[in-house]
Image (cartoon, rainbow, N blue to C red; front, side, top):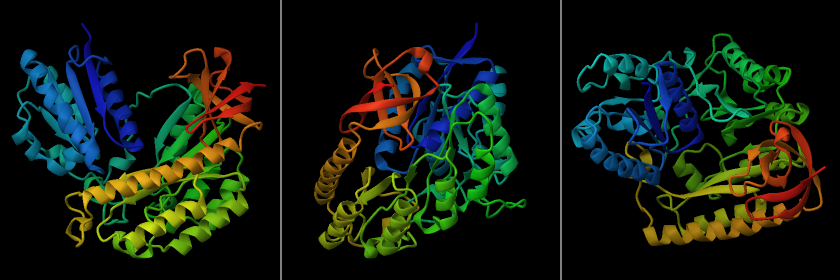
Length: 440
């Protein structure tokens, strides 16, 4: 009888793609996916340590698995990702029913562990699968992808920026770019399989290539991928504002397959807080780049990240962030409370902000941005926009859903034969988080 696996994924898009690799390894090892944890023979929890909420969700889920393990002793539980990398043996000591721990640079170690458990080896109590693997970015792993329209492709791993609030350089290591020909081959293979859109992933895609022997920068990588016949759209995340070059902006403007959307994390509108965060720019520099983007690509959608309550944030600093939101008018934001993270410099900064103040500031930011986003969406009513049809709407099975080049969700009535196609939609109604329209 075929054995089954289940994966919990916590956190960001990179973790989602890492889970696809984990699923790929399990699938080629004769396991099949199950939605039921009670039916699973192997459960993997792919963790995220960027924010406290994701960490709390992981611990809560892991705690619930203890009873399942007691009722089914043969069940194997593995913990992957950033929390695994950071905590190591502490997890084994606190949760003795965990069988294996491996970090984001050692997903390939899962292959050896699977062979071991098929040979009935005992509890794994060592963490050599937590070493930083300097060659991981050159390895080609099997991937079990969700859907057949859009695909994630990692172009680099790790980060060199050491923002004061972020654990990524400590859990995912220093920055390493994948060889450009490996990226090209992967995207080309995906297109041959029928995928229409790829999203290139990296902590800072703008700095792609700086450590490659066969050098190629990010704009030039986009150019060679753009040449792949059959590929319809290219997206990328995440861009660091400091490294956003005019060459990249020109490339986005000149290559029609590159989507008219960029995610450019601001984090704060205060120069004081940006300095404490070690972001490497001031607000004026950020705003100037926004102006250059909008001049070059007038219909570009710009989204961002905002952190409220960073240590030392005064009311004046917070007001600077409010001013930035009303000045720039982002299409959307991801806003979060500051999270205390071990190993980060921010943990040791003075003047941590009271939790009630942080919550109030976050609520205010979200309220302001909701109005901005809704007004921007309303401007699209009556316009005809090209949409890549992704499938059946999750909220209404009678409708199809897709995304505009600017990454806005559109729901409409259509035929399932349109899935995977680019269609033209007349926008009839704008909501807070989506658009509704009629196919032309």
